[in-house]
Image (tube, each protein chain N blue to C red):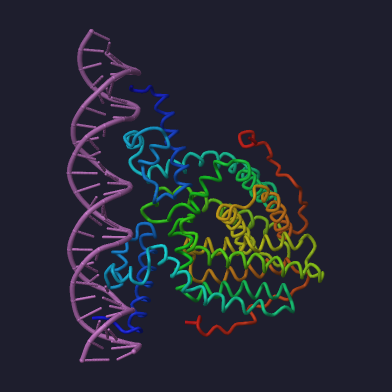
Length: 220
Length: 220
DNA sequence: ATATATACCTCCAGTGCTGTATGTAAAGGG
DNA sequence: CCCTTTACATACAGCACTGGAGGTATATAT
């Protein structure tokens, strides 16, 4: 009963789906490969064929959503015209991404509330960490350009503004995933974000929609 | 070799200290009672005498810092004169608390990065959850009073301002504990917080110090 | 057509942890 | 001074999980 290459890939995806389900259900540490295998309709042998161990499974789960995020989010930062506008668009896209794609929400919920952040898991968290660092770095650069262009409102510096937005975004996602905000919480978060961004800038016009609102793969 | 009552209490505290150490080191799920006992210089028998199981140990660890937090933080909210000022003082006290008390940082770091947020652990998280809810509720009330008093700047409502600050504080602590910010990160966070609060208000004077700056038990 | 690599499954040995039951020696009350 | 309770230590039973060895049948290359 050996499978073809495409069947094998299908099995791999089913295992990843099952792992997500079990991780969310009982947490990464308590999740046994036996239980994941049962959920996927295979045996532990299949899992060990595709993945070395539980940690590699976790890494693969993270990697599955990583590409999507990079594609959606990197696009925003290509446009260098108006830095504050760019940051706002980026953040709105993040909210849009988490609001519309349950897969993304599940994976990040696993990171935040269903696993322990230990050195042995470092490889699994490498992607997430690099995305976080990229976000911080992009914020810093954008606000520095805004500062040099004289766009920042009184009372704000590039440092304080980027720190504030960084913490705001982190806390937003953390609360969302940890405490199961309502699904339409995205709306109120959007409004709060726009108020925050407006207070950063001198006279930035606030619109209700991000400029890059074509996310065909997310509007499901 | 039976101990006296005070010796027993000392043992209990040593077990809690050991549990904190082991939890931070290898995470709650991988931490065995055997290892914790060894760290405390007792056997598992002693742990089972004082606590029913690992979950109760975790609950006890949280409870140990809870009283301190309530004492320090509740005080700020007694003063109802200037709501925005009150909120600022409260937030500064939180930063001060986390900056000066390593014990607090350790326990919250365990919550954020060293354990899984599962229903079986619900009892352990009850305290933390109630503190979180209290924070959100206090923010909402304070900003509503500020709004009614016409203290909010243009572009902000009680809802958006409290949501924003709530996310900011959450993200601040989350990043601090998850990514091990430098110890003097507290300074930059204070500055960012003051800028944020300033932009909430119409013309609130920003001072560098909270009003209730007498924390004898924290300045160690 | 044959050989080999693939994609699994089954079984087994070993480990580590939990919870409990039992032992014990001293504290503390009457 | 005796009895009970306390504050542990020790010993035991049992489970759940991991990783690997070995099997098997089929896809795929030659």
